[in-house]
Image (cartoon, rainbow, N blue to C red; front, side):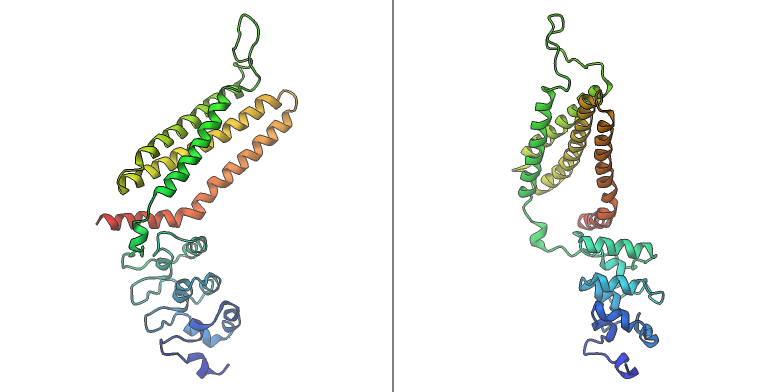
Length: 283
């Protein structure tokens, strides 16, 4: 490649690194002269990294940002860095979250200008009723399952005349844990259903707050249901096959921990951006 073609720009001031696709970036970056253009912006001040993020070409963005010659603090004419562009929409995609984490891990900086979140008006005014209906359905299913589980106790009931109808394994620690977790799950799910029912004809701000509260309650109910399932299996199987009961508990525990650990990775940038967006809306 001749030097003239490397420095050539189109009518928007974009050079080869701006215009090339991911499959061509690796070969271009082997040319020493091309690295001098790595931090050069177009007419709008966007570097190749800025443009790659704007165009959702995250493979290219990951490759560019991994170079030792990249300036991760470079700002465009809007005062935004590459890290800022990953947060300009509070509904961040999965690829944007990974890109945000990659840039943050490499010490990328944010611009001095506050981020203005781009949320179309029609999306701001979007109806929350589908979300409310879905959450109410999930909460109702959990309430039904946990209510039924309370009357089908593991180990059965005493049929003797002295303790007719009493639970056989009432002193079993796992059964006690089952009762407590099942009660928590049922209480949280029923509370979520009731609060969601009140929000149907409420104002949007009320609906938003109730959705957040109900989301927390449904999350607690699901965790309680999982613990109740583990305890139930342990009560029934442990006396005859302890290793099977332990194995089931380990599987359920791993699944629960995996979900809990994935939340910061998948939603941390979204949560941070959402908080900033809500702060801007209050101004």
